[in-house]
Length: 506
Image (cartoon, rainbow, N blue to C red; front, side, top):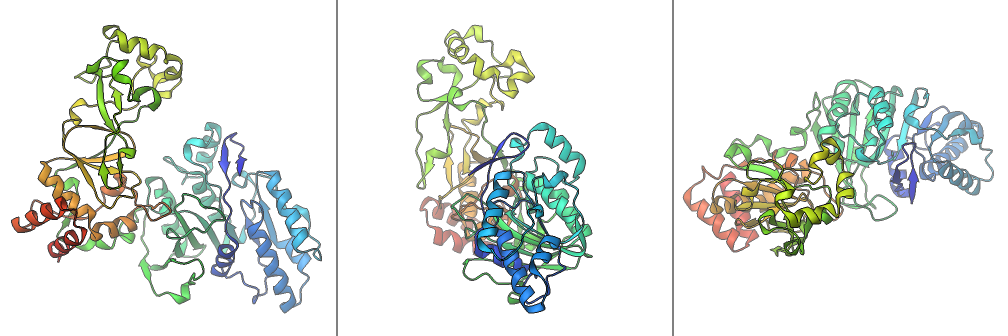
């Protein structure tokens, strides 16, 4: 369901499944076999009350064991924030329905933005923070949150600010437990948050949920649970991989520890292949990694009918991720209008009457884009500059999100769209060798640790992760291995590729 933050932007609320809520409370040590009468709990974004209901249920069971008044404990120890009054009303009604015998003070709910609320230090902050992408946050709120939270930098999503606010609101020994996107552990925008945790808090556990769906509906997500304590950092933390929601192990059931990093760079922490001396990076071998063109108005700049509307010399055949499916490259016939000349300067539309008439018919839409407002005279440019020579260069094509088991090569016919990453450099045989390596289990294992996955286990081929991959130097391997890599790539033989790659790195 859609909800609105004070930004005026719409966000989607995705609520956590009850079993995961119970697991998170167990993970945090909030269990009814303890005296919970004085454990203060805050939920910073309560939604429709999944966490609140389970917290109250546990308080009631704890009261039966330790003999305290559950209503008094609930009203004294529990505070729930939400910016949507409808969510609060639903939560209150659910509480009255589930626990008619309990006298709940509605003041435990605060219809406020947790990020700017006056929050007292507490023992446990737990929940599923709102997921609002950076570009969906209105500028006044961005500026305010940047002033309040040093971790809210770059293109950070809103939950990063919720992390910092929660961590700084913990008493000594207090715990923070969130389920949300795991992108903060890997992306640039999470650097300051990672540094804060490494320097000032103790990371107890990361629970990876990428292989399951911990929410009440099917969503695209990168979920993980983090458990962090306000205490001095330790040498290691526990990492838990969940493959089945019905069998979610607690830390004492797993012996997998990771070395705790001491700064904001956590790359090596999740990158087990980094210690192999024979390996290098893709760019260190002389290849270039890029991303295709962003236009800001694809429906205008890209189309199959453009040859009828625009001068041929201004058009380039373009590939999108939709052209790379089922392990095949099949061009759909789309062209892109190129507004740049050979020197990278914007063309003079008066020299191209067909293009001028076509673009002026869409002038109002094109002028409304941010890139056009920066330089109004260039209102018909694409966001990114187009380099015509890229069309003729052989290139490895990597869709941002790919269900393909094969990595495909364009021998030099097309321009890539923004949803395609590409690798250029060397001849076609070199690209085949590199493609074979990238298709190997050795690399997909690295990618699974470095990058986010969409539900279904599909990898994300993004430049920030591609650059971190450790690969065999294809220029230094034996000629027999080079020939075997090319042969196995041409044959699309994944088993043989793995055999060759394993032999190279052995």
